[in-house]
Length: 378
Image (cartoon, rainbow, N blue to C red; front, side, top):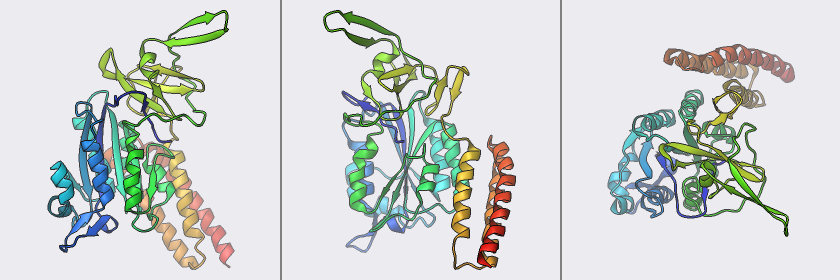
């Protein structure tokens, strides 16, 4: 579910944004002089965030990052992409080798240079599946754990991008916070949809919103008019800031007017907006029963299970593969899971307990799948 912060007046966003662009073959374009430049839609993406007058520079901080194994298109930003630099005098501040390192570096930027109370966004533009989904997904989880809202944008040139919805959903902030576009025109047209995260116009709610049962109800005053039997509610305190917002199936964060180091979390609870000014990291909710901030997402084990089931089904239902090919591919899949466990163990990440428990579960599934698939092919 895409986070939409919808303000009735001017943009009140307070955010640190990293735009991570994949400079691979699908996003390069030839020029008349024989050089290369990045896709026009990427110009529009960066230009909008940097130039748009609604984005108050005191509130919105932006860093531009380019990630590419070869680095061959990176020079296009500074040499051939004259339309971008002429208007913005802006080149990538960071050159990263791949999506996983891009996610890791963007999280480091948020942690090292981010501002207290600012919403943390990483817009990840990629054209295909990542080279090592497990390492990349571990970095996406690390970003999420540190309150970074990751929004993947899959981009294809004259056709659908070669990345699955499942992979995008696992990289993103939640199961629906991603976009897929097929060409330059679609990417340019997407700009206003993406910027709705920070500073959109007014949008009407079209469906009932869902919310955590542990929201904190704001203080309200109620007046009753005997003639019309109508009750009006006037929010006060933190709820007053939330009353200026409309929410669609999501959480919004605004600065706390009484303490700029904190933010207010706003929720839509069926027919009313509730709020709390508890100091929770971005993307988490205050759980009143537990007295702490909790993350309303699937557990790591559940997410990994979904990923592995999808991978297993894809491997084992390729009818042209021999039994030996299936065994070889599944063994490689087990090996990549073991590699991920090693990385997590070395870095002492909190996922280690989850991944070690999941290893036995995944291998059992693989063994049962191999046996069943061998019987099917005989």
